[in-house]
Length: 337
Image (cartoon, rainbow, N blue to C red; front, side, top):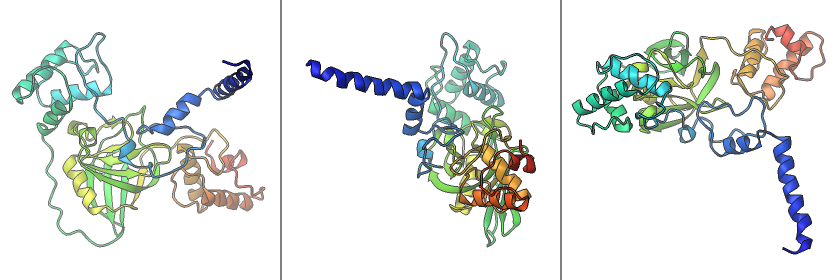
């Protein structure tokens, strides 16, 4: 290499190292921009991630996808193994502990299940075994629906009671049992819109998907191949329904429908919030503004122009500088710290 090229090479290396040193999450940020994991919080600050057509799209969801489960050394473990144990237990094939560990006892139960369902009895749990286990599980019959009244649709999901309620024209129309997020991966609380609908993705997503415009991850209402989980805290944050139930919901609920998620407290606010931010703590601020008569629109986790104007209105009411920023006097007034 000619000596004249050395300075350029060194300069390039300095730029790369400077970028990595000044931003420890540089590599992780680039990875998250390429593929948004379902339920994954990109950041509590908005580092340039723009809301685009990925929001609510099942195409970018990953965490409900089923991995292959089998006997290994050390044993495989996790929530999916625990769900397998529950499913086999509920169908009478497994009597061991719900340990979340794929041990030899569990493998033997899987092999017996596979033999009785004309599957290859190799003890490896893939899509075929999950689906056979799903098909073997008794699912409640959807009651006669009758005529569907006219009127605006709205959905309320109570994560504490694990229920989804459909309202039409302001009146309760139908109620469904659902599964919600685990305590470590809770379902979001707030007011969102159904922005995408998809059919027949199968696997852990079941037969239908209704995607929500949650700004920090890919969340939706969907079916499942683990029907025994309905009525429990089991997911990574999405709302699971029996496939027959979500198929009915899919037919009667259009895109643009408001989904109000309730049933637990939202996050406390610990940072200064300003236009462009998003997160569960933004919803906390928006809910408090709503309770104080300040119109911020939907509590959807986006600190946009309407939320900023609502903060200004509150500040004017109390003789404060109306800068539209939420730190710290606004939080003290609203009781969100």
